[in-house]
Length: 252
Ligand code: PEP
Image (cartoon, rainbow, N blue to C red; front, side, top):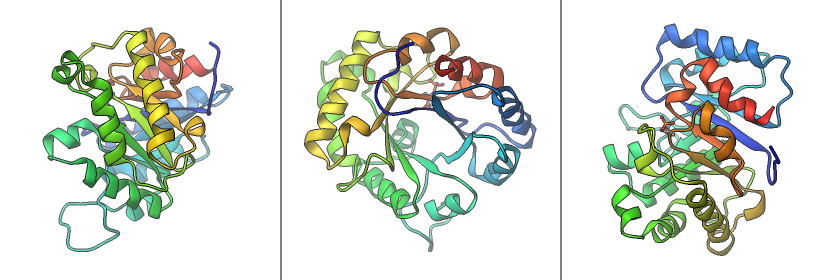
């Protein structure tokens, strides 16, 4: 596969899956990747409660640790929340913000997502900022408009390419087995890249734009080979080391 642009990232979002019994998967993945020369970075984002355990399993491997969400404040009276600084202390180098499940299930707005991304940057973490249209919005021909709005609202000004990763995740493709056509992915990613240049102070060409939504071993090469796609954010297929490896190996 021809790879262009910034170094790719393949990140696994475990969501609310994975207790201690799951630790065998990153252990297995680390062993499987030991002698593989990769042209991408690899990350796993487990539930925060086992982040430290996962980090210690990953010791000595090139697999990085990420968080799934963070609060915008560094500390304080925010029951049940976790700060970017805490994730950093647990060994994370990145945190996902603005995932559609947070936007939908917790009513998170672009403004809040932007505050969370600022918190990630403050803690020295990469913010993996998720964007994406619903099925109704796509059917109404509003995909690019929605992406522009989310870019303007969710990406803090002054963000740098080093600490910012965009994940284009059509909401209707998450966990459904459905994926956009490569032409639709190419259109969305080109639009995001263009908007990054015009709207926020990012080095657009150097910013990684991941695709997410029902990525699996069988469609990864096609999706990752699409112009302006610099890796994947993977949900379901990141839970088993062998499945995740099938995606990562696109970059071997
Ligand atoms: C996700 O939730 O970020 C995701 C892409 O999920 P899945 O791969 O299961 O569609």
